[in-house]
Image 1 (cartoon, one colour):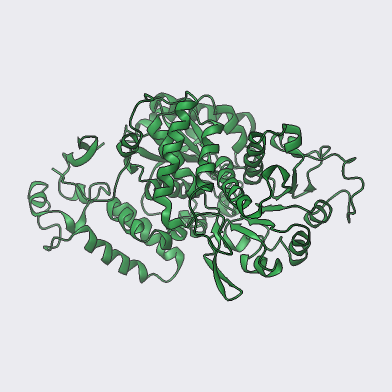
Image 2 (tube, rainbow, N blue to C red):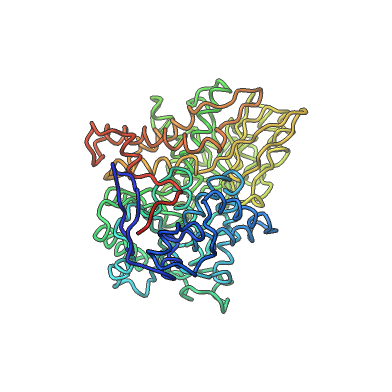
Amino acid sequence: MHFTERKQNNRIIGLTTKLTGIDILNDSRLNKGAAFTKSERIQLKLEGLLPGRIETLEEQVERAYAQYKQKNTPLQKNIFLNVLHDTNKTLFFRLISDHLKEMMPIIYTPTMGDAVEKFSLQFRRPKGLFISYKDKNRIEEILDNYFNSNIKIIVVTDGEGVLGIGDQGIGGIYISIGKLAIYTLCAHLNPLYTLPIQLDVGTNNPKLLNDPMYLGWKHERISGEKYDEFINLFVNAVKKKFPGIFLHWEDFGRNNARKNLDLYHDEICSFNDDIQGTGAVALAAVLSGIKTSGVPLREQKIVVFGAGTAGVGIADNIFDAMRREGISSEAAARKFYLVDREGLLINDMKKLMSFHKKYTRSRQEISTWMVNNPNNILLEDVVKNVGPTILIGCSTVAGAFTNDIIKEMAQRTERPFILPLSNPTSKVEAHPANLMEWTKGKALIATGSPFGSIEYNNKLIRIAQCNNALIFPGLGLGIVAAKTKIVTDNMIWIASKTLSEYPIEKSEYTPLLPDFEYILDISHRIAVNVIKQAIKDKVAGIDKNDNIDQLIENNSWHPKYVPIN
């Protein structure tokens, strides 16, 4: 690394570097722009390389925000922020921290999908690491090329299952970069401890394969034993080069996401946000809504439309919560109905994934149902025959929750839970304004995309967003601070429970989740409880008598300038 941190009581009070002049201005971690002091300009040989006026960080934020507002589209704003990230990391994080609610949809979903799709066209400056299958025997050497040895968290993707837009090849690196930025923005995790990695295993996206500008390996995705061998080589290299690392898996395809998590769960401290994070925040919304509906979790009937990585992850988290209430695994599994492309999952289907099987139904069980086509039992069939109390969408099928389906559901349950969670906004199963209208205000709603507030009965109602950023930053901060060996189910559960119990403004239409403006406090509470749980589960690498708040502060970073010499 080109600099060292100077600390006092575990707080960074300054940086020391041998770099001078243009080299410092080109290092986004050191660059302060016009905020370098007079003495720093002399000592670091910056005189004449900057305008004469010395600015404060606050003045720079004001200027950057004015520049941001001049951009006309979300993608232009995303590009502006990416360039700022490449230029001055402190200013980047401070600007977004000051305007977090406004800019979150720009730096992450839904705008991130557009940025990922246009990665090769918009490419300016490399960030993170790209590890190609062609270099499978040189992974350790590639990891050595990254100049920072203080890495505590890696977000890795292979770009196959990006948001709701599928295989985007190496454009997935933007997802890894975005997730790590959110760790910093929403939990103050030190960005110097983070590393985004893109595994380039080819792509099955014909648009990318035929794009002359595509920067990735123009080859069909490897699969099977070759893919598994590559992932194993990668994990072993990471374990060797970064012992004690927290490995965050992100946007892997449905055939590999669960498999990778299960294979390496006990081998390296790892977490899959698409499975565990999505499930945890959706569970928090359900637990919160139960306080309003008054119907215990064990009495709910759940239909999940879209039985991929996210949908089954949500089912698993709710299933685990039911088990914690004391009902058997068999009884809990009978509460779920999963509907995928081929319809309701039946146990004799040929294309079932291993993680589907506990939720499947038998032909005999549904033999008395009234359906249009027994060989393809659709969502509307399931809703009519089951009468679900909870309807969850992870399908990316826009408008799938129709007027007829929702009215059928609302006729049979007093407070229906309806969670259209697909991203981006264009692929959402139903608009919350329609859901409120169709259920006459009875629906308990949380969405995956940000919808803000809607008007109903002359009242402005805030719609809760099942944003994974409500969970994973605090969880990750707790994991890093506690130096955990693995991520236990209890740690995921306590994160959900903490979020579900966060104080929310009470009204006739109480939202299911807290407003994002409280994210730093939410993340801190989650981190504290995750550390306590890790100690209880005996997976923490710290002393049980350590000061938890101090552990968190030791791994935190705040966007402000410190002296450089």
